[in-house]
Image 1 (spheres, rainbow, N blue to C red):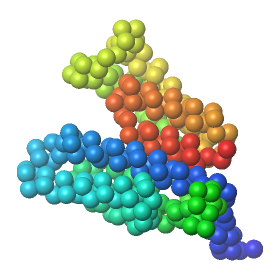
Image 2 (tube, rainbow, N blue to C red):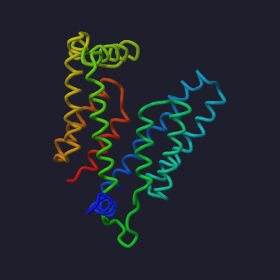
Image 3 (cartoon, helix red, strand yellow):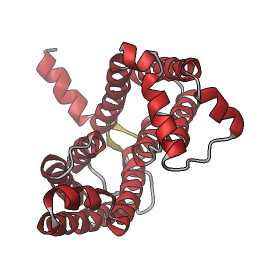
Image 4 (cartoon, rainbow, N blue to C red):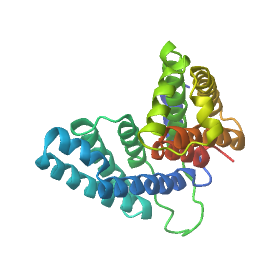
Length: 256
């Protein structure tokens, strides 16, 4: 059997369940919430208006409204593949022309993959977990594993391992934003050594999570580690929606 034959068989292979469809719903719900809040609170819009002025802000808001519509369609399953592709195009445009955020590029890649999937249930078996192609699950899990590995590899730098980056980030959130860290934790991260410990612990966790995803480790410990890593990032570093999306990717795509 040639490599081409193996590839063709892989693209035709099906798996039971409906993990990709469930991830589609979770992914759409998470990012729909993000875009509604971002539009209402003018998070991205504040930066765009400051640097580019009101006309660019109006363009951004139009793109955000279109994104919200596409994500709502993806959430309920209305023309899901078209909505996923529209979300990919709109987010990629937003990322490239307005705000080059890594989270937006991640969203674009996932939305593009979902746009090539069979996202609707079998109309002959409404509500039943119809089989779905295996390749989207495999690609999305490989993408997540690579992201954790690449991120961890970048964090082997002296800047991260020393705890300096975490120290600055957490002092900013505590002092400027009034982040309500507990007193014990506040004392711990007031030192460079405490931040260095947390930085190295996170680095080890990301390498481990990359391996667990790559080798399809049991779901429960893998998801538990993802929740721990991203829970810390949310509560200590104010990184919410990207982490929730990554946890959903592990929770819904790993086999039970």
